[in-house]
Amino acid sequence: MLRVLAVDDEVPALEELAYLLRQDERIAHVTTAADGVTALQDMVQMIGCGERLDGVFLDIRMPGLDGLDLARLVGGFPCPPRLVFVTAHEECAVQAFELEAVDYLLKPVRAERLSEAVRRLEAAACPAPEPGQDDVIPVELGGRTRFVPQQAVWFAEAKGDYVRLHTVDGSYLVRMSLAALERRWSEAGFLRIHRSTLVSARHVSELRFEGGRVSLTVGTETLQVSRRHSRQVREQLVRQHRNALS
Image (tube, rainbow, N blue to C red; front, side):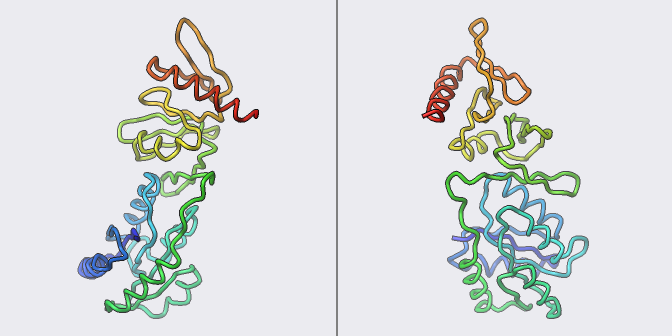
């Protein structure tokens, strides 16, 4: 089933569109946004938290960030949600399909026409990443969106409701929990070494034992392993490096 975002600055139109989408049995979840900037922030947060977003039903004429500009930004995502434009303006259809929209609906939206758009969206929705494919976390940086690949992350630290990702190029703050990131990246070799720290095993260059304590060298940083996690971390690192050599 599909998870979608509806975007329109006209509240009655947005509420009607969301209502019609929620009546469709192929739609699992509908989120709404009343402007392009909020929609972009919501998308970055959803994708950053590992939530799936299959499609965006998008108005064109909106103040600030309009639908076409938002679509161009969304096109830069690693696996962008598919777009369905919902507008009162016929003249933007060519631009919309140049942006690879799966459909273009004119207001007022009819239920049967929306149903056809959902069918097209379902057929075109971005497939789930294949096992082993490098994951990417979108990070907002003052009006820009940077995509931080999983393989570039040395370690992650819990910071309240956020996680700070540390890489060779710097650190980035993402709104998500460390527990959610651990679930998302555990199969990619990320280890919990402390209640507030998650480490990429591929970037561990040294395991050190001093006075009964265990520490790791990760990139250019030295991190302490909590007593609770010491045995598990040692065993996982030894097992992983043995497997890499076999």
